[in-house]
Structure formats: structure tokens, C-alpha cells
Length: 99
Length: 99
DNA sequence: GCATTACTTGGCGAAATTGCCAAATGATTG
DNA sequence: CAATCATTTGGCAATTTCGCCAAGTAATGC
Image 1 (tube, each protein chain N blue to C red):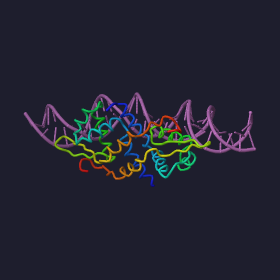
Image 2 (image 1 turned 90 degrees about the vertical axis):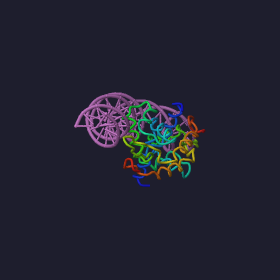
Image 3 (image 1 turned 120 degrees about the horizontal axis):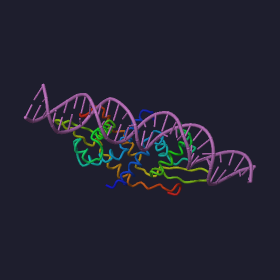
Image 4 (image 1 turned 60 degrees about the vertical axis):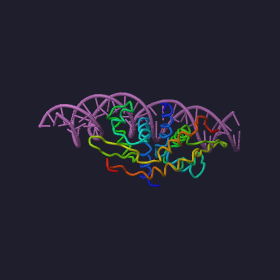
């Protein structure tokens, strides 16, 4: 497996590995939203949210569409909710060697 | 959704968001291996590999079992290969707003 | 054109992650 | 019990990520 392919995978995973970004992903699972609506759901600065959205789009998780002065983002991959459910089913792993 | 549950999810995702750790996950998809065998597959220090393994176990991705002086790690969740295939199918997202 | 709304980009300090070395632990053998 | 093998832990510098502020761009209305 070439290193570049691994880096692409890692970039995609890193793009989810943040509470705000994960919250955005969940919010967008209900349907497309514009940046202001997404921002209203977070406790971060608007510019921070914009950067999170750019990162997630570049990783391939989100697609966006400009309508007038608004930019509407939506989930570009429907496997994400499935994956999150899988994650929730993981055991704790607190105790070594007897899970 | 409680903040603690989100942090658990983020921790699980972060535990995959590293080239060495992702490589370990793929290696272990073929079956359980002890730390030395895993180490031989990476270009990192043994202590570094050990820390990666601990992190992945705590996140719930790996389980381990001690046999003599060796510790055998294995994948604890079979949804991981499915998720990685999903990631590989993501588009690039390089161009904004016309994906 | 000028003002306003919607969003993005630049920059920089703060916080988190990473990785090597050295030291410690734990099991096995002589 | 001393020596060795397999693995983990502590510590710390280097790198990366994060998030706010300020400034910039782009579309709409007056």
C-alpha cells in the first residue's frame, strides 16, 4: 500500500477527529444547511466553523453549493452514520489483556 | 447528545488518525500478532509502537492477550475494514461548491 | 457607488500530539 | 537469584492542530 494512499486515508479520518466537526457531520445527516445555520449549532467562532467545513470538504466528507450569498453544505458520503454507530458499539478497553 | 459520548467517539476516531496506527489496524486484519511482529512492520521505535497499541486498545479497537512474555493484539471490531473501504471511495473535494 | 449580509483567509499564540531515549516491569531460563 | 527477552512507562523537545481576532472577498439591496 503506497504511502500517499495511507496519508489520504489519515487525512479523511483526521477530518472527523474533532468534537465540533463530528457534531457538524451529525447535524448535516438530517439534511443540507448553510454556514450560518451550522454555526448556530456550535459554540465556536464563525471563522473557526468555516475552517472546519473547508477541511471536511477537502477530505471528501462534505459537498457544498453556493446559493446567492449562502453556501449550503451537505454530507457527501452516506456511510458515515453507519460508521458512527459502529464506533458506539466499541467496548471500553480499559483493562489490558482480558477484554 | 451528551458531550461525554461525543468525546468517546472522537477518541475512537483519533485512535485511527495516524499512519502507523492505521497500518497496524490493517496488519491485524489478517490475524493477531505480538508486539514484536507489529513493530517489525513499522519504522517507529518499539516504545512508540507500544504506545500506539495502548491507545488503540483504550479506544476499543484492539484487544490483547498475554501469552508468556508476549502480548498478542487483535482487532476487536470487524467494522473497520468496511469503514476503510468507504473512506477510499470518498471524492477529492478539491474544488469548492461544484462537487 | 455604498452599506450590509454571508462567508473565507491570514496570522499568531495556546494547546495537544508525536517520537525517541532511558529506565522500569514482568516472565522465563540457567 | 542473576541474566535475558518482551513489553510498558516516564520524560521532554519537536511538530502539529486549534481557535480567536482582524481583514478580505463576494453577492444583494438601497
